[in-house]
Length: 307
Image (tube, rainbow, N blue to C red; front, side, top):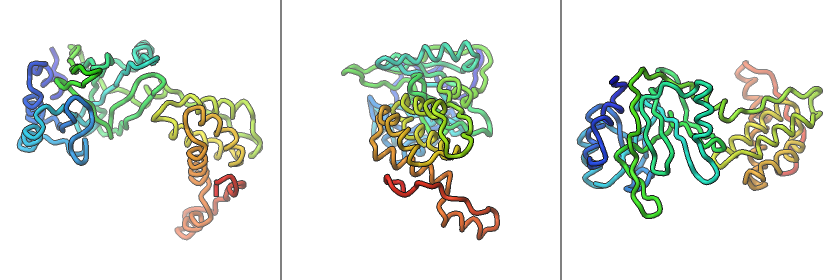
């Protein structure tokens, strides 16, 4: 059986009979940074969350002496050398359907090991890509999250209380073959493709089919993706020469369907237009450095709360 990295090596030895304190020490001794989370839950107990993760045995022992039943948190990404595809099952969303589509497309092969989560989902661990940023992201509609740089995961033998019962994370399978890195960006594009609108020509004239496609995409954003999706859509409209007032007309209803208030929509669209068309003061600063020509300010920024 191949030993892919320190995390899977420890999991081969640790099982549900181990106290979490002993397992946490075993991970730290193997060079895997860990930190404590609330017993039976996922919230970090340390002041700076996963940023406090450590392999220092004295520090780890002190944490678990203070919180003997604390769950074990593992920072994902370059810090630990492991990234995770987190498959969720909740309500009408079944992430296994999207995972199977991604598997058939060859996008999720090469995992090191898998863990069954207390909710019935799955955590598939992969080696982090060396010298390459792999930020965490969510694809809520697909029921899949990616835990990479800037994220963390709860690892066995931790347990979460669901409906009053303590349910553990459990090692499901170790890959006996070669492990490989995962194209996290390609996986996200596959699970949650973003529309690529054509440029509007001439500027300022809106083609209904392009704008409708963007609005429909915004309307389907789930929690955790709504603001980012709206900002992206507003930037695309700004780059295409759509007036801010028209962008608000198009995006307010769509983003409202996704759960955002009119005030949130106005603030986000304003930020997007200012990012694409900096105000005169920013343009003047660029000219002073000698690197940029003046950038015209989009018309229509006054009114409707966009100034």
